[in-house]
Length: 194
Image (tube, rainbow, N blue to C red; front, top):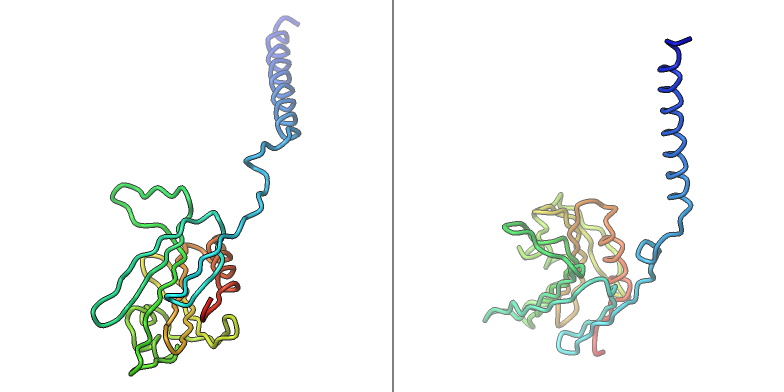
């Protein structure tokens, strides 16, 4: 009987530890979620400019920056939506983003969306499989295509008499939140005098 006491003590000790751990795990799973982990409804911000005749809404989880990339040959502006709080890594690459690049569609050229995509290197079209999909954006004919660079990319191009609008998103996975946010931006896009 003397030899069984240490084994019995060890079994009881293991059982006690298992019981305490199971109580802790159950009490943690029953604890209410704190505010930060609950679903938060996204507020949409509005961007519009009569200079470039475009407007759209975007989630307030992004910061919008505007950069003038004009050259003497062509006016161009780039709007970038980057997730708020993004801190670039030292010596690292930039973030995935949603961008809207706007090019003046000069009078003597008047590109269609398809002509501009296939004929302008800024489209990144040649970095992809070369497949265009027709779609509409706010009743305007548009073309969608994929491309690859530092990240995977998807662009949708709309051409009007005065401007070519290239809406793009870069992503790591098709399930990234930026993909659904990109579609939200497209679904709210408007063109013309605002």
